[in-house]
Length: 265
Ligand code: 5RP
Image 1 (tube, rainbow, N blue to C red):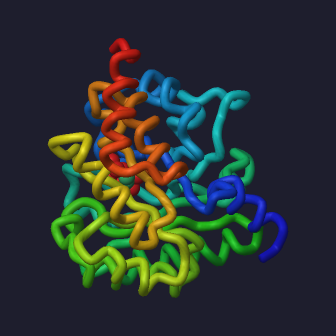
Image 2 (image 1 turned 120 degrees about the horizontal axis):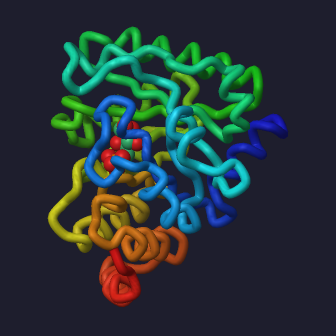
Image 3 (image 1 turned 30 degrees about the horizontal axis):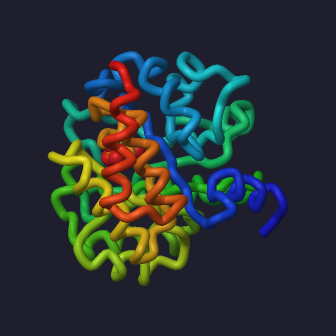
């Protein structure tokens, strides 16, 4: 691996081999998502605990100070919305010149395997990888958002992740599922897990993150289950313990409970 690419990957994946990415890109198709209405207010308290943030250029410029940032994974796909015809019909939204200008560590793009736009989204990924590799910028492929999330089983997610890796993604983001080892086992590049819509209890989040890491994920790209929680800082601190200190779900729950006392909303 060339120096630039290796350096950017090292900015994202910590020396212990794990990572906690904080995605705040949801507005690119969901608009002012609950508790991300004012991105700066959501991002600022969480930033110290994230290894990187996943964000669009608009929110990066408007809501993150350049002298106080963490490594950036720039969301560079979009062009559709949740009220439009088909969420899967995304294009590449951001030029590689802009990516370089913003000094980002990686680019992120969604693929939509099994949809009418499977081919387009996979060719978008290939094109982005070609551009990224020229300049030493890794691509994180985002699998299965929107309606595709309904197909959350190991067979579908393993298929999507493997295809993303085959086309050159350096990291793949997917969802946790039963038999998660089948997803990581078939994917020759690092896998991170997203959370999807907020689940009922914090313990459920700690449990699936813990299980996914035991089964080969290197960490998370977890948004709503952090910043839609009533106690987001407590949540991210507890998740850090699972990811970077191998805390069990029960230990994470204890950290969450003691940290939440300190957090005033
Ligand atoms: C959709 C995304 C998000 O970054 C991803 O889904 C992670 O967020 P969450 O944990 O909230 O699902 O790609 O824009």
